[in-house]
Image 1 (tube, rainbow, N blue to C red):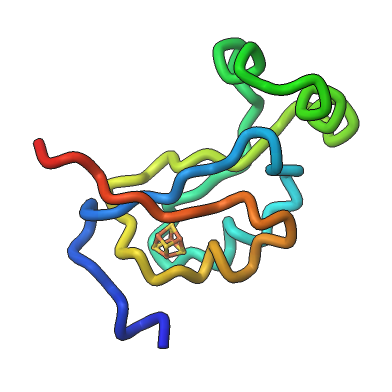
Image 2 (cartoon, rainbow, N blue to C red):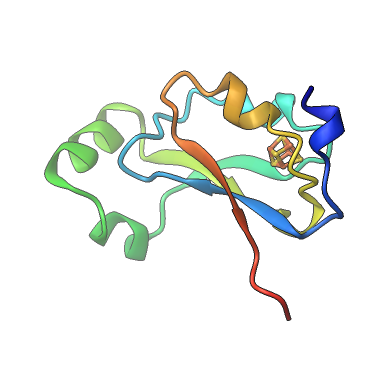
Length: 96
Ligand code: SF4
């Protein structure tokens, strides 16, 4: 069960695969902690895209999911489960 897997806030964060995300957005309402938002892709992130990723970004309006409130993530995995592009993974945040 996803709820049984919860971690302390900020121990993990969602990582978005920029070559997979199509800004479909089910991850945004799925997150109980408002971690994710759909935003315009930054110039730095655009530079890191593959050719196919750039085409996909153009077709889907230049926006993708971002972890705008990553420190609130409790690793429930709901965003991972609802993403139709399998673009989200959870990664342990480095200790501060
Ligand atoms: S794992 Fe859960 S808490 Fe973390 S961003 Fe995804 S839906 Fe939100």
